[in-house]
Amino acid sequence: MPSGYIDDGYTIEATIEGKDGEYDEIEIEYRPLLRKEMWRHSQAVTKAKENEDLEKIDELVAELVVQKVISWTLFDRNGKSVPLTAENVLRLHTDLFNQLILIIMRSKEQDNTTAKNL
Image (tube, rainbow, N blue to C red; front, side, top):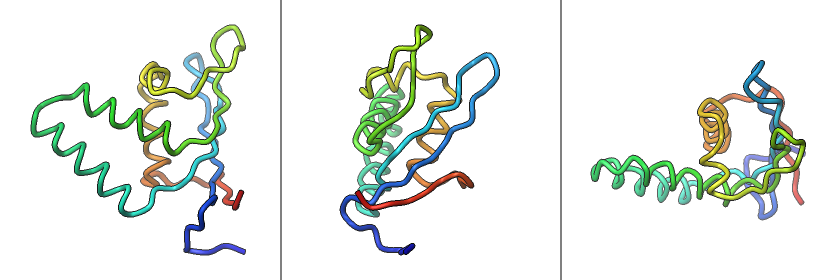
């Protein structure tokens, strides 16, 4: 039964459509951000912006992705599964990187998401 309450273990599945010639469709399973996590992340990003440390912003976002994403179906050009690490997140195509964080932050509406408790 759907609920507005985020239980421990609550996960959401989402699909990022592929982009011709750039990347294939990717399925992710992630845990949504709690409000206090969102505020902490926003404060850290704001501090990095004030210091004009753009690399730090990307690092913060990559770390957030690794903390929240449980699994992804990302493969390299040889068909080998790409491990979910901050370093690998920072190697994503820019459009894919942006879509991923928008989904995790729930700023992007996803028609193809499902939620469940693990």
